Length: 264
Image (tube, rainbow, N blue to C red; front, top):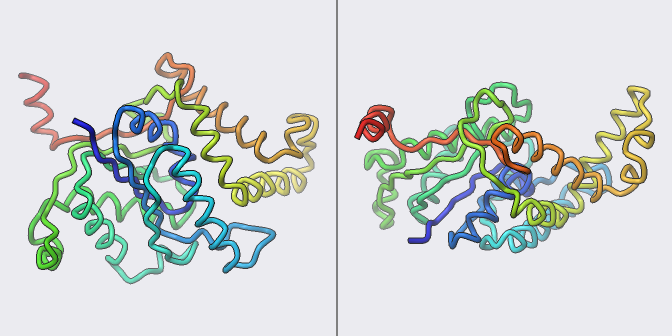
């Protein structure tokens, strides 16, 4: 039976950066994938005003999702860098509602246990997603949803992406989908330019010559991003004997249930 996968992310490019290979692999296996983007991403640029950037990033996200084979994203359109400032519980309620609407078998989100995360939007989404996915099956948790015909739903598989090697217990082999991950990320042209330019600016402040290290790639943001994604995926994959991988903290049932399954 094919699965439904819901991906809960803060910004238009996060699904591709952290789980693009896994998403493409799940789609290839017959899954239906819906990416939810909490913010408009309207502050990450050195070249556009906020309104223009939000419109650009929305179109880029739609194209990137199509490359992965996912459905057009769900846009919550909160302001970038302000997710932690939303009314308490709002983001969590929106995620619970979406889980009950789509009834996913799998949810992918950032790991709330990754304590080194510096971006407030990432921290906000990680916590809200964790709360939502762990309690959306309780009928008294946002009972108003049932008045709209949205029933409680238990999500069996939780993939929490994490940069922390100690926190990851599952590495997905994305050797067959690394190029699709890179192609999807390349659709985020404005974000790719921004991310590469930020690194270049910091390198210059540090007195480094990136041209000596990266060569022509320093003038080609798409090539630099492809190199970075491929290098990171190679490092992760090496830990499990794969050419390329993506790392997650994978959770299914309550530890007692998992223990009984393991002993049966």
